[in-house]
Every structure is written in structure tokens, then in C-alpha cells.
Amino acid sequence: MVNEVLQVFGFLLTVLGWLLSIVTCSISSWKRSDVKGEVIESITRTTGLWIRCTQQATGHWTCDNYDSYFLGLPVPLQGARATTLLSLLLGFFGILLAIFGLSCTTIAAENARLKARMVVASGMLHVAGGVSLGTGVCWFAATVLQDYQNPGNQVSAGRYVYGEALFVGWAAMVVGILGGIAMCISSWSTKDDDHHHHHHHMERHIPPYTYNPPRPKQNSTEYI
Image 1: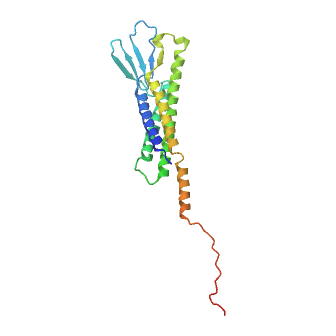
Image 2: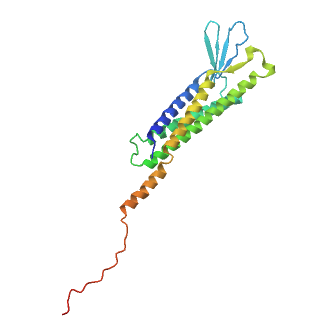
Image 3: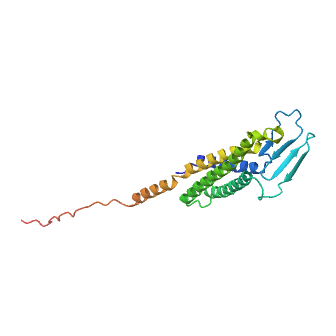
């Protein structure tokens, strides 16, 4: 039996996680310059997956794209791009499957087992997408931390700290994985329930067989 409330709740979580993944991918602040210790916070530099930006003391922002998309870029940046885009792709197909598979939709309503399998598959896609996004975010964050703690890079002007995108990415990972798990749980046992129900349904329609032995004929003729 499908738990429709849990199914819809999981679907809403996965949609939220996917939207947060889009925000994570587009935010230009995966890391930002560390201004701690500076007397005048004159320049703030931020780095995203696709652009780098600089904010002057006047509040004016200037942003530029990376000179190359793949060649010569740091491996953690390339990894974060790949895992984030993979997460968005998995989430997109997961949402499509869920729209077809949710119990509250009329698509393929006559086939409950197929719809349940779609929801379970959708949940698995979202869990995989959350893991993919989390891998890229954690890898990038570990690199930022390693560079920050590098003894040869103790000048605050050259150090970077975590940007907002990393925290949004971690939130997207958690929300997406929880939503995917909820969707799997809501529909996982449906196929077993349907088989069990079908088995009992057949049993109700097969009349029980009982053996009735023939009765001996009574002689209606009386001898006098």
C-alpha cells in the first residue's frame, strides 16, 4: 500500500533540494577572500564554479569568466562542476519520474505497481544526485580548508574561506537525500502488497472444493 502523505512529502523535499542545487551551481561565492586581520576591508574576492568576482570598497562589483572551461583549471573546481551538473541532471529526471509515478496523478492510474516503481526509481535518482552534489561540495571545501591552513599562505589577502554556496550545497544534499529516501519508503512495499492482494483476490473467486459422496438410492417399492 502506498503511503501517499509520505510520498508527496518526499517529492516536495526533492524539488526543494533540486532548486537548492541550482542555486548552489549558480552562486558566484563558493569561496571568498579572508578579510580577517585587515585594517581596511578594501577588496573582497569571490570565486564560483563559472565566474570570479571582485568587490571594490565603493561597492562596485566586477566579474569575469574563467579563461578556459576545463584546461588549466584546478581539479577540485572541475570536479565540483561535474558533480553539480550530474546532480542537476539526476534531479531533473527524478522529478519527471515522480510526476508520472505519484499516486495523486492520473497518469497510468490503472497500473499501481508501475507507478510505485517509478516513485522508487525517482527516489533513488535523488539520493544519487544528493551524494553527487555532496561529493563535489565536500571536495571543494576540503581544498579551501587545506589552502587556508597552508603555512606558506598565511597572508590574509591570499587566503580564502567558505562561501555561501557551500552551505547551500550541503543543505541541498541533505534535503535531496531525505526526500529520496522518503519516496522510496512510501512506495517500496507496494509491489509486494499488490501481489499479496492479487493472490487473496484470486482465492476469493475460486470456490472451495468439497467431496460429496453419492447417496445410496432408496427403494421406493415396498414388498408385501
